[in-house]
Length: 270
Image 1 (cartoon, rainbow, N blue to C red):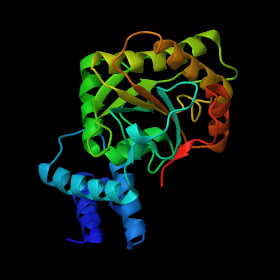
Image 2: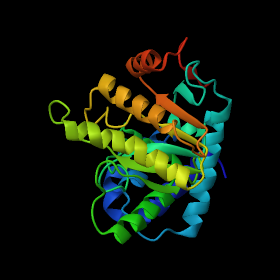
Image 3: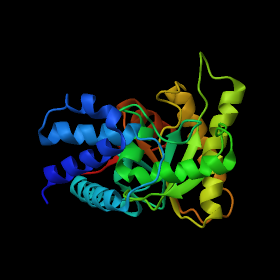
Image 4: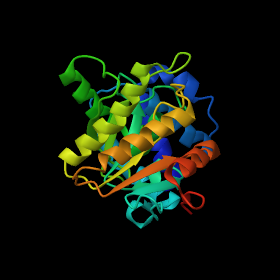
C-alpha cells in the first residue's frame, strides 16, 4: 500500500467513526499534502473512545515511517554545554529526539490539543505519537477525576515517538505579568518532571520552553526559572544524567546560551 493510500484509508476509518466531519473533509485537496493535513485534523478532533486495532496498526506504520524519514536525533550524542556537563542546548523539533522522556506543555484537561493542526507543542507531540497517547491520558484523567493542576507531572508512553515516554506538565497561564505564584508553579513544573523521571529511573529528559507560547510567560524569566531549577536539581544524587533544553525560536536559543554559558549556537539536528 502506497503512502497516499495509507492516508486515505486512515481518513476513511476516522470519518466512519465521526461522520459529522464528512462535509468539511471534502474541502481538503485530494493530493498527499491535503489528505495528510486532513488526517492530522481528524486525529486532533477525535475524542477519546475505543481504538480499532486495524486502525492503530496502519496509523503506527504511517507515523513510524514518517518519523524515520524526518530523522531521529540521538539525545545522548548531543554535545553538552561547557559549564554544565549534564545539560544540553538543542534547537529543533522535540518529536525527533530519542531520549528517555520529552516534556509536553499540556493544558489542564491533559488530552492534547483539539484545534486542528494547531502550532502548539501539545498538538505536535500528540500528532506524532498517535491516538494511543490521548487514550492513555484520558484514562489517567478519568482516574484522577479532576483537571490537572499547574506544576505537577504525569508520565505516559511515547508510542510512535522516538522518546520512550512523555512527561505531561501544565504550566501557569500569565494574564499580564507573572505573579509569584506563577513563578513557583513554573519551577514546580520542572522539578515535578525531574522527580517523576528520577523515580522511574530515567536517565535523559528533554524540556520544551514551558508556558512561553500560548500561556504567555515571558521567555527570559521562564528560561531563568527552568535553568535554575534544573541546576539545583543536579546538586543531589539522581538517576538523571542528561537534561536537554529544547528550543525552537532564535530568541529562546539566545536566552539559553547566555544563561547556560554556552560557547556557540545550540546543537541542531540535520
